[in-house]
Image (tube, rainbow, N blue to C red; front, side, top):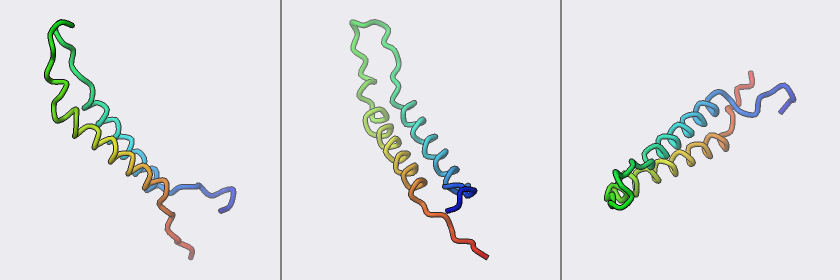
Length: 78
């Protein structure tokens, strides 16, 4: 790799951005609503979205980012 070459290609950056987007969506799904009162229990804390879907999306997003980092550039030497 020369000093003038970029370490990643355009597809790597696109995949990284997509992975970060999936991670952000996962964290947004984890955010909970406020209870009306601190004395009242809100059962929405244990919803399937917050317990399983959101952490799964975060892990999938991290996997996409890792794949984007480790993806080798295509050899287009002509």
